[in-house]
Image (tube, rainbow, N blue to C red; front, side, top):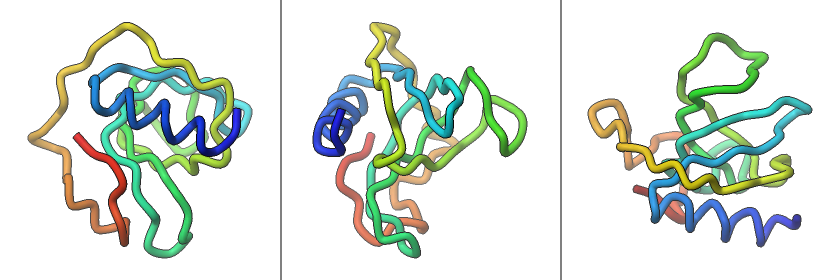
Amino acid sequence: MDLEEVNKKLRQAIEDELIVRFSYKWRTRVVEPYLIGVHEEENELMLRGFQIEGESESGGLPDWRLFRLAKISGLKITEQEFKPRREIYEPNDPDMKKVVSRI
């Protein structure tokens, strides 16, 4: 799956508020996708999501994570809807210099 296809599928999942499952750094991630943007420092497309299941090398779950779209593989949109955590979500993500898609 190329970057354009990953971007398209994630944008659809954000719009439909559907949980996604993918592999990232050889670990399975289950994530509520909230925002795709161009990262301020990395200057590449990244997903801001709330990881609810799977593995993480950076700490406990559930928690907010950033994922480089270029490193996401095996992306699947589940049929499981989620209720956005609007009370702890920042739609004007300060880490992004440009937002492409968001809840």
